[in-house]
Image 1 (cartoon, rainbow, N blue to C red):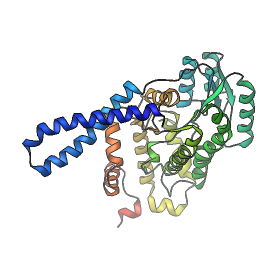
Image 2 (cartoon, rainbow, N blue to C red; image 1 turned 180 degrees about the horizontal axis):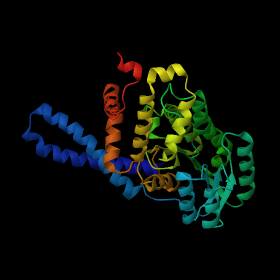
Image 3 (spheres, helix red, strand yellow; image 1 turned 90 degrees about the vertical axis):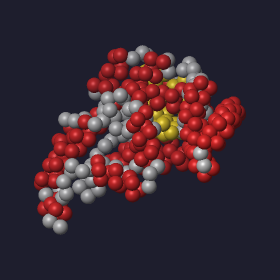
Image 4 (cartoon, helix red, strand yellow; image 1 turned 135 degrees about the vertical axis):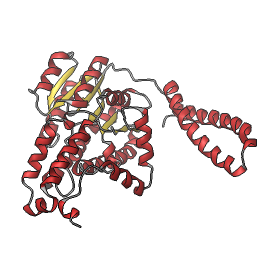
Length: 365
């Protein structure tokens, strides 16, 4: 933490403490002592947090200038990466937008509709050779620019429940979502040590709270959150900030309503006969229908994520974690749920899954 940030934060806490003390003295005579003490502690806590949100916007909103700064973004074929590449290009950054398919629709659109500051590169984050090739190109192309940020956005969503998912689903999610992120980060850290820039990694709400029926994905995102926490504490000595973006459910190609039934059909076609017998075809069909309903619940406010990504890259004093939600009601709800005891979280999940019928064998019990 820099000195200016520390001084402003300390000043904020002092003002909050003084303000709350004034109100406390006013209300002290209206309630029993034990109630007053309890309410006072809770009020101090809530007031300080809410006021810091305002203080942060007023005092910690200074942004770095894009001149001579470059940003690398993985997974720009579609979704968050594609939109972020366009946004940063419009702000004046040099953008290295990596795509798995450099001749695909997303890459072609970036080439046609962006400035000469945006360059589309081919990159498969699961292959050392592909990442090394990108490192070589960027090193030669930077010129007077410095690599300011690496945004690890590339990711996949595969599988359903723990038992119904193939082992390959786990391998694919971990190889892309985790190992690919580690591979890219390690390759570009030497650039960031020179620029004292930042690593921005996209995790997920499902990496903080285990979500059923998306087990391989959730497992990989829990690992991503762990990697972010370790890396942030290790890179502090170099002046490199590591920021975790953890959105809830947003509408991207991962939650495409048309592809979900097809993908699940492919999953279930190779299931062992004994598993199909235990679960029953009715259960599997019902599960497909409800997962599609859950995907329809995803938010279309994707720009909320882009806004947090841009803040993570450009703010002089960004947050360590951005838990992006569609609105403040969802943000507060997720925060409260995440801090409830596990038994309460389990009860909430059960209510969520109320309309998914029991497996065939379980219904016989």
